[in-house]
Length: 258
Ligand code: FAD
Image 1 (tube, rainbow, N blue to C red):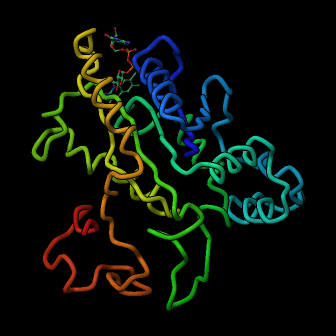
Image 2 (tube, protein in one colour; image 1 turned 180 degrees about the vertical axis):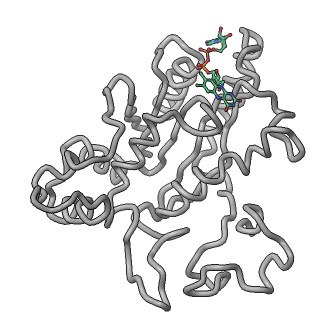
């Protein structure tokens, strides 16, 4: 299996660096081929702007979606974007690994999503009409591929429990897992989260190796999160609200999980 790890941490000698090294070694020892996009080491350009479509007509205002769409279709995107898209095409499974910063991914990784997820590649795919609102949420360019988050968090597991003050971890990660991964078509596996990072020591590290090793060994067999697919009868089109008989009375993120 081909595994791409998109990794964001500024310091190789960190908990995240140790997790990344462990994941690469474990996957390669199991016979998988691994590529790592180490975003800080690559000095990844974070901001989406007109330089991402270098051959655009500069006499016109920069249009974030239209210029992305044209550059993608015409093969004139900036090289760093095209290279990452090739890695996504190559991968069977994509792991996004990062420390939780302000309840989300570090800005450098958000910038990878903003720029690599070009119009026509990750969004703006398929027919858009009153009867079919795009090929997305369970279908799309990433169909048939799996994705998983490896996240570290300073907060305790209880802080992210159903009644914890930070909000349940499934809700905190929903915009990433549902919005950035399920949307372009990935099957999204439950995340592997290391909580209370300030307390990680040698004893906890050996538990982490065991837990993460088991998750990596079961990448192909773990059941994905059963997000409801857009174009398979659960949603009113084009309103894209859940039909009344689906998750009746339920609102919020959890209603979108079968
Ligand atoms: P490190 O600081 O590198 O390491 C953590 C601990 O692990 C250290 O004690 C280290 O000694 C130990 N360790 C490292 N490697 C090993 C090893 N191989 N064996 C044994 N022990 C090891 N947290 C939240 O919960 N929610 C937030 O919204 C949030 N926002 C943040 C925003 C910012 C800007 C920052 C800087 C932090 C935030 N945090 C938040 C905390 C953050 O999630 C943690 O600091 C981060 O996840 C820790 O990961 P690290 O790789 O940086 O750990």
